[in-house]
Amino acid sequence: GAGVSQSPSNKVTEKGKDVELRCDPISGHTALYWYRQSLGQGLEFLIYFQGNSAPDKSGLPSDRFSAERTGGSVSTLTIQRTQQEDSAVYLCASSSVEGATQYFGPGTRLTVL
Amino acid sequence: AQTVTQSQPEMSVQEAETVTLSCTYDTSESNYYLFWYKQPPSRQMILVIRQEAYKQQNATENRFSVNFQKAAKSFSLKISDSQLGDTAMYFCAFMKHSGNNDMRFGAGTRLTVKP
Figure: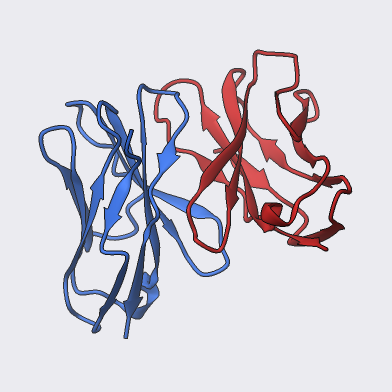
């Protein structure tokens, strides 16, 4: 079946603007994760959704970052008042159950000018 | 907190030869999962291999195998008969068995397979 999809593939924005990044997980996967990968770095956990439970937001770097997941499927990561240090690749992953292997989308490369 | 360390920022290997990538981790958990992911220039993260800590047998997937040393908290990846398509960043990752299942990643090893 289809894998995890993310849109847009690339996003260029000006400092101070808001951006929305979208993730469409694998159908039937109940867990969804957002990670950030800065240039040449490993992945940094941002937020985790599991079913209808309250999300784990412990990885969000500031209150400018938020995410929601509608209907237990599609998720949107919103960054308000973007800063240059927000430039990174934002990766989304989903898994079928807790503890299962996470499957990643192709990521969104965000560039803040 | 769990940390994952990959001490080799870059490695290279000749095509058809064998290479081993190192990974160590720190945790107080007794049950967990370990992963190796590959990230080619396309930036798509691809699962290479997965190991459950309670299993003593090392995981293998075709040309890829791991050497899991639980007491030493070491989880190395061996790639046999290296192919040009193996050129990529390789990330080692740790995930707890229960609770928050976010993965903790190492900084990565850039592997180049030379013809």
